[in-house]
Image (cartoon, helix red, strand yellow):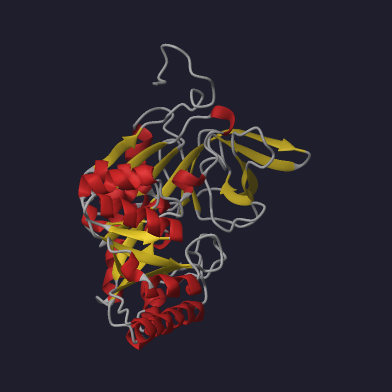
Length: 407
């Protein structure tokens, strides 16, 4: 049970401590440092905080930058004391008032992404009015609503002197997550390398930075092929050395940095056999637990069964159970026919590998059920509650005098 060192303390917190997330910050730090060691200084790390905003503060001493995609994420960074110099302000929509606030408050610090001509205009005009010159990266589209197509980028680079308040550092590119094929990443980087070479040869533009999101695969399910960080990054790490581009390479990652440190804990609250099918009802469900790539609850995630006292349950024959949440919808099935050791009401199930996205991607407001508690865990300092359970019924009803709503 060394892997779940937090369990004994967790079950002593209160009689009904679930549902809850626990983020193991020792595991997070070890994993990120391993990634950095494998890169051997050939690239810097940018944490895409949308993967898990709760890890923003803990990541500060381990990554070089943070990708911030909304005003809310920016406010989290402010509360966590993230230096503006470490922020890449991204996002497909940038409200002019929000941009003005950031520039007025922090001057020309940070980097801003350009996703359109409108972004270009807003950033240049706002910076110009404040007498600033700000650094920007142009996002290259991968064929969707994000970014700018290459012909438009050629025009922007050609006419870059028309935007005197913008210092164009280079390009940003991200084409998707859970990539299993290293050759796709290599092809994308070689293409970006050729494009940067073209921009230099044709327009005299010499890029200083290339921010690239590799979208490394994360093995969420038991049938997924497991690869160590060294195996994943060993081959990838050779690619930067093959590029003509000699500037700074920044790898933007969210899922790959956060996935391994998260655990979701939920308790069995009921068990039944309906028309020959065995069902366990849990106090959590799909409103809290989301595995990218799960299909019709058929793929089996990593899950550990413990007693209400926190003891690992290993005795008895395995039984296959359908694990269902507490939502009033037939869709609330986490996984079908999962093997457990004679489960009883109040047993706790620990789902692994939920450090990325589950904490924010669930349908949290559906049926007005409370948000889970969130804990940080370090072996040295133990379990620390960082967000209590939050009732959502007030968010799902009209404002009433005397309640928490404010004007």
